[in-house]
Image (cartoon, rainbow, N blue to C red):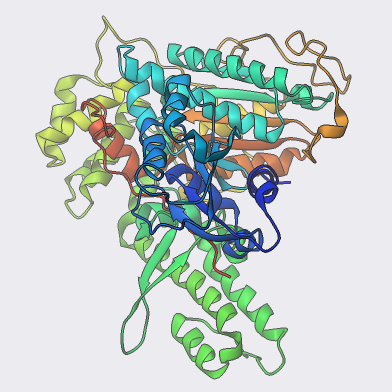
Length: 604
């Protein structure tokens, strides 16, 4: 079962189905996180079939439904609990309340429910405080963690955020039935602080459910906590696989792609790109150079399989597909999907040929330290100066180039940064965007008194792998994942918090951490029996890193890689994070503008 399937199963079995009664329906009330969690793993018609007649947003004004019982799924925050209390303060919003907290509710917040106790019929903690973004990807929907994590001082805000993040990570492990060995990147002290909190919560879950993490293969599972400073290069590069390219270059609102349709009205259309779209899943990790060809081949196979729909040489453009849809409206749904993906590929290729191609070549040469022919780059500055002086190159792309140049040099002189900014005609206020990256533990400005050499892993030789010249860089996380699965990951840079897990051999031996726990096998759900490697990156996970998790899972077969973060990272968002890194956080969060990854239910 995938992460999405496991999450949906637990939602239905632990929350919705126990309250289903013949001839009766319930209302489902959710906060932001729960709305996204449900939207990511459930189809609307599946929820309606379970006796839910309406799904309502806790934060919005709602019409009273006093004849219905309300099922609340909430994060235990002061704001959410106060809204819940308000629902029963003056007039009853619902007949009764069934409350399910996504994680442990602190006693101080639980006490707020005292005044409405007579309306509460159920109150449970379901330990599901994450969003199953994809089958192997999760997010905690907490972008502020990046800012709080990189604060120099340990404030109350930082401590409470670490507590909440640890709780959320632990709920993911518990939902997956994992009690993993715990590892962290050693260069950032806060990684250890976070992992200790995760350990406390996992130990508590293990005491409640002795079957968690049972089995010789399960004893090999690991959770690795890594801060974003481990790899500052990957978030800066122009990635040329479809999913990453779409989110970097196209008009995407979360996972929704908007475009102007051809026709008399030029109406704006929107398409949700997620795992319910088979074409999207098939193409999202492919290099953009082959996507258009593969979509056309897929269309030809589809048309050849339908009687009376032979396309001859095949549709070769959006216009051809539009004509086919008019001629054969009975296949409109399928043809529209092919049309969307052909449009995506063509729009990405158009962006590529309008200047991204030149950027990619320079970026790859810088990141790799050599050109496509294997010749060492002797003068990196010589590569970037023409592009920095070209005002047709977007300002953010010029900033990305400067940051990349700095990172491959492990820092530059402050005076040289000023010269680069002046040469690139970048406003002086953007200097802080670049220097803020030092808050992630990266060397930006050379200071012999303060700088230490940034950890740089020995990169793997991948000479036998087929690559495109403009896509030679492999995210560092892929090396880390492969080494962890092969029991070769450096234990000095990535130490175990509680000792090394059971041997990689199929011996069935137990590690010291696991001890002799109860083995009530009959109560265990249909979890994967093989080991999992769970990665948590503090500060955002990129689409290329998500792709790496799928690639290693496919190659290793016995391992499943689950990767996630506090939020999903694009190059634009990475720069936005850096711009706001040293700005103060107020009660409503940190000063950063992020695209809302709105929940989208799949239409029937």
